[in-house]
Amino acid sequence: MRVILIGPPGAGKGTQATWLKERLGVPHLSTGDMLRAAVQQGTELGRQADGYMRRGELVPDDLVIRMAVERIGQADCGNGFLLDGFPRTRAQAEALDVALQAAGTAIDVVLLIEVPDELIIDRITGRVQDPETGTIYHLRFNPPPPEVAPRVVQRKDDTEQACRARLDKYHSETAPIVPFYRDKGLLRTVDGVGSPDEVSRRLLAALG
Ligand code: ADP
Ligand code: ADP
Image (cartoon, rainbow, N blue to C red; front, side, top):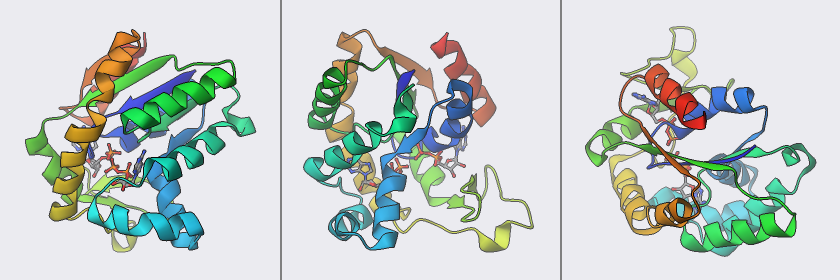
């Protein structure tokens, strides 16, 4: 199954993807994770992406499209994938369609997780991750256990300022791709407010 997760920063895409990928039996492709790995490894792509990411701006389409299309073409994506954080612009959505068409496939479903802006800043500024397991926690809503707490790290772009910039970009660049998928009949909208378990149940129901 080829699934896209869309939602504002902090909607819970990464949190939900950890069980959803198991359930669907497909790899979880997070373009944010891929770009952070490139930055950490100091590759040419990472060097180009770093500044945009720190400021909460979008990395230019040509770079992200090349990276995502290449990843989708790898063998483990033969039975599908769970895309998280891509596409984020109209140009990316169109490029993805073209690449899938060329491969004789298409997106099956687009899951939109909706969370109002006023909840986003709290979610993002409290987000931390266990660098050993990759598990995402929240300092207040889902605190790491005592043995994990000393080693958790916060993302450089999870400041209030960068978060507001990302939220603006979400509304100006990413929200406009929602009608693109609605018109194709692929869109299923899920309320992202409530406990992570509640949101999981809604996603399952939306998947049918
Ligand atoms: P979040 O989890 O807050 O939604 P991500 O981890 O998906 O954030 O993305 C972090 C940053 O990586 C973004 O702010 C942006 O700079 C860059 N990025 C990730 N995916 C894309 C994309 N599809 N297009 C452009 N930039 C992207
Ligand atoms: P995204 O990948 O969409 O940016 P994350 O899954 O990283 O979002 O979640 C952002 C933050 O919000 C994390 O700290 C996570 O623990 C927390 N979070 C995720 N889902 C919920 C929820 N349903 N209620 C409260 N906090 C949540």
